[in-house]
Image (cartoon, rainbow, N blue to C red; front, top):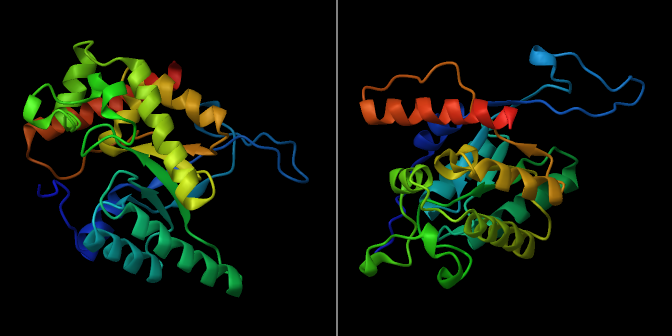
Amino acid sequence: SPSIFRPWGVWQVCLKALSCLVIRWRRRKMEGEEGIWKGKHGMGGKVRFVVNADDLGYSRERDDGIFEAVSKGIVTSMSLLVNGPSAKSAIAKYMKIKMKLDEIGEEVPSLGLHINLTEGRPIASRHIVPSLLRENKNMASMFRGKFGFEQAVYGKKINLEHVRIEALAQIRWFYQNAGFYPSHVDGHNHVHVLPGVAPVVAALVAHFKIGWIRLPLEKTLGPTVDEKRVFFLRRIIANAKKSTSS
């Protein structure tokens, strides 16, 4: 059957990366410092400016665009979609780049996990995560889609244990194929900040000592005229704010 994953070009990748700029905070002890850096809302930590490209592994065309953006110094971090059609080839290419940069002593772009619960097929057996999948028998092995998953979450149709099983399967797949755990975690369609899903993902991130997790707290939605998309983005921001207080 034809893949539902669609290719992207380099400029689309760059635009998406620039729209996903992340300022990350982390509380940590620094050599020669007291370990507390005062920041907005009382958050401590060193501030880093990161340009992250999501969806590595989505398709070879998109991967080529991401790696070209990396080579031009535009992208400094990537997030791998482990159930994407080109996930394994993307890791192989990343490892070659990593080896080359390590040899010349240059900084290697970080590689994180783009948790996906909305598009494609699960990594875990579909028989043990049925609530994540479409109810249509002809597509029973596929995730519910962006809006379908969100509606199922709010409709209490998602078993959060199934979320844990699938997210864990994706983390393990990443480790088994990359040889290391992801540097960070974020979510395809920002599923990781949805009610109920957020604490499940946070617990796994803490368990595996993954250093960073994205919080989509944008102050602006950017240029868009799609009312459905505006509503979706506003809900994402609201969910992200709630997840920080839970």
